Length: 262
Image 1 (tube, rainbow, N blue to C red):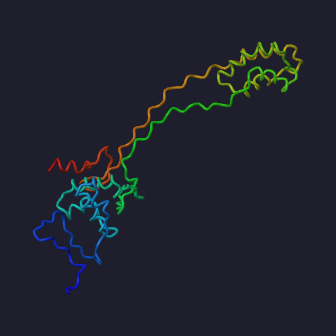
Image 2: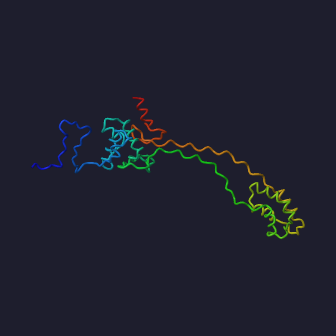
């Protein structure tokens, strides 16, 4: 009997037509790169972006992958290559963070990922929330004005008030507190620099001080200053890979001037 050959490719039945792709796979032992189906069959990436990602993943570390370097290898041109690089950034296969050298110059560092990340490092800069006007700090709720007046005798026994005196002076103390004067400042105003002679009418003395030393109301808060204009985000020039600021990706000013002149 003829021995079976399980590794031999299956043949189509006589007269039958096989549709779709047929694979002839041979193992690679060197000079190859592993690519996941999440990239090779990505439903949203263009074929240009998929091919460019495979090429970048196959390169050794440190190989140049700037727009001009890639355009020198392939016929697609700088504009299509730049658009494909942005696709890979948006889907997490590529990151191009900006770094500032000690000389002050900004450069782009390219990082390739063989698996898409959930968060892209080089995402488009999001606008920061506008600063809200700061609210004045609220001090703890002060004691009632009547309590403040009743406790004045603990500072000086000559400031002993009757219940009637406390009720009569309470509205004046309330006015001080409503104008933002701290409780301690009101107490200091009423108890400092007292006469050395006996005080026959403490309520009259306190009423005089509350009336004559009343501070003016605090001025109304001024308008909130407008937030500073946020600079445009850094972009990679589609023509020369230079880092420049612009609201949208494209070419730097020098490349636009050279194109116009040409």
